[in-house]
Length: 318
Image (cartoon, rainbow, N blue to C red; front, side, top):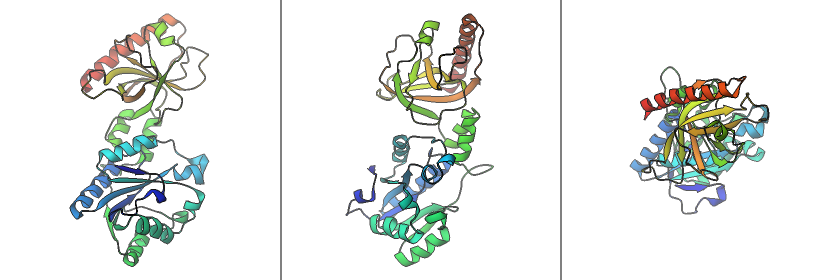
């Protein structure tokens, strides 16, 4: 997939395209339905499939106090688009200047002049342009003028449409299994393993601690069953994806941890040296909330019980 981060990077000889647009945060099942249809239409019509997205999220520029926590980092978002077969991803830097464009200006500059759109494929509730003044009707009228068709892909979902907002709400509640239902995959955090306080090792359960700049939405504090995935190893390697007990939070038993951390103990392994590795920590199910223990012995006993429960949970998932 060709990854572009500015309009001036679009090749002058880019073939005519089928284009869609959106934030695609999380690339959930609703996004996947739209993007799969986009790719299929492009292949059938011998056109280029293009997904236009933004970085940062528009609310981070327009209303920073209301900006949502990203479900996926940009690189992971683009990886997910590529897995779906999209030919080109155009990441537009979201700025106040871009936000001030009229629907007509945006369509002419991006869809027509840069991407040579023959088809623009969107959901029924899409909005664009200054103050979200453009909608599907606007897009259709402009298509009649500029020579592209508009294809509407209806929402998919059971009781209600899949959405990034609902996914975030599940993560805030610690309902990672519910978030997975919307995403169509296990929610994850992606980052580099760094040295922590070595407290897990002292307790007999050495953990991989993710750096503070890890990407992806961290769920509610607590203990989770999940997986630790090593990016540098092939999927065929038995150590590529390993069962893990995951702790999220500030570790209330100790008073010297002041930021939320994500740390994963790979079950029954004390031989791993993961420092400096890029890994993914995937959340399958919440086991319990965080608790302050009055003794270290009580904490160790609870960790042992957690590990036993997580081992059983993951044996049913593998």
